[in-house]
Image 1: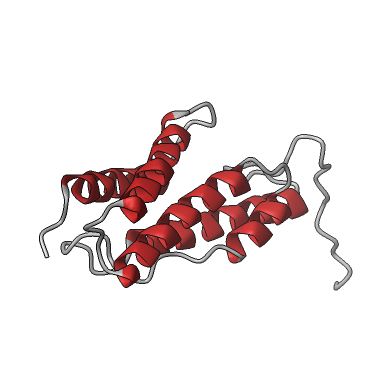
Image 2: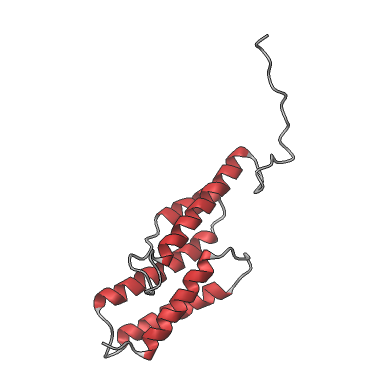
Length: 148
């Protein structure tokens, strides 16, 4: 069956959102959140169409949109442990969005964000900044030489 214009636009915007989610973004970046909102609207319109795609295709689109929405909500949490937990509860898409992808982009984004949150937790626990240097308020201890 030929995809409708709405479905093509949804897939194009979904690919763009997955690419934006994979990039390191400025915390003040607002576009991804607006785009995901537009994806939700497009998905609802697609479900209401008379000539809608197969239910498996629609459920995969829904899974990817829900993943992106959950990822945005996880980023808004304050502590890195909360972010990591929220990230673990997200379910990335199972099928690549386009034929060019070998691994679904949402799965890649999921792995990247999980690694980023683990790194943030490690930094919080060890008192280091993002460059791996000890924070200034942590005193440096001299090595203990007990073996003579």
